[in-house]
Image (tube, rainbow, N blue to C red; front, side):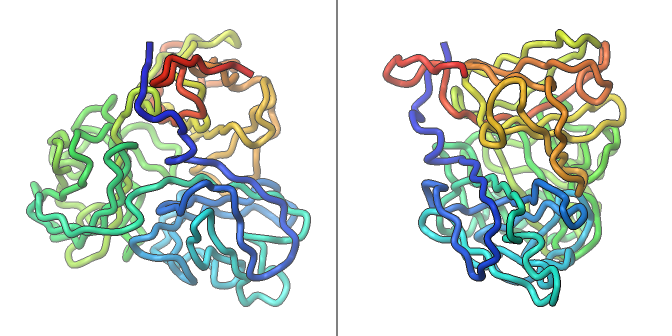
Length: 361
């Protein structure tokens, strides 16, 4: 049984959806905490596809502070200043403000009748200097939920290390160079320390020492190679680090069977967020949550590596009380013999610290 000290998952992670109403500024509430990391996406494509825009509290909210998961833009490079941006983090959510475009000033945030989603994580609501690594970092870490945001300046030295503040070994981390148009690097424990993925592409896993210097993370640091994407000299970088917490988060892998009756991925909780990627061949990142439609089989997919609108195909993922059931035989989801990695966060644990069972829907 997957007992957990976290009985209310939405104290640490929560998905919030809204429909645009053409007002600015507009404050979105219901997150249940002051987020440190907010990832937003317009779900429909009434005026064309829109970017995934990511904000964090270390850099700060505001104009030109976003990064984009579906591109290599440097920080502030995705035209949120024109089309709307997250302007403040609040005690229960965040505030959205129009950009300066005369026609589409709220395209990314609050256009009338448009639909939007945000995924939100709590770190520390504050920062600390961390000198555990050879590079000093600024860290906002939540050791209860296993999540930290890490800001540091690169030195382009293979073997450099950066403190992450989690106190345990991270299962996954994602790094972006804020000052350069390099890919998002993804480390995942299921791939090991010689391989990496790019969040912004469909590429299969890549093998090189430039990503982690072929060195696994420890309970205090992660390692870097000599690559501009995660260690550009005198350049600013951001890392999102995740450690697995029983009953709240899980970072693992599965093997496809090529059938519409696909694998069952046991998580030990009812997931609120599930993101996966094929690793041995090309394939889109795919993301499902419990708020967009939120009932089987109509759990709609967004693609972090693409600006495309929400996919309306059904029968892809079933969300159940203790995991995910794959319901699609597509190569990017379930190729026979294919290798896939995932990250997941709980809506409810399968069994809480008080012994109460979660329920399927």
